[in-house]
Amino acid sequence: MNVLRVDVLFQIAGIGIFISVLNIVLKQAGKEEQAQMLTLVGVVIVLLLVLQLVGDLFESIRVIFNLF
Image (cartoon, rainbow, N blue to C red; front, side, top):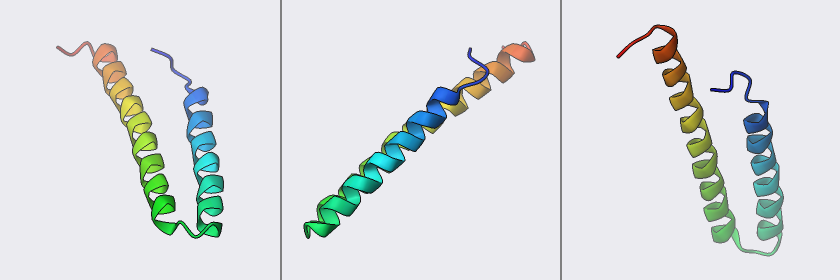
């Protein structure tokens, strides 16, 4: 259980920047559908990272309050 997870915030920011740049490149190339799919994949990846953090939060709460 790592209390301060700054590395995950940097990962999310890096994914956002990377997806944004690729999205701009694909739109300039006229591939709007691929750009939209890439954005959707980026959102799903970030959502999975956030869900993992929420799971860690609930695990920490369970341990702190000695539940189950």
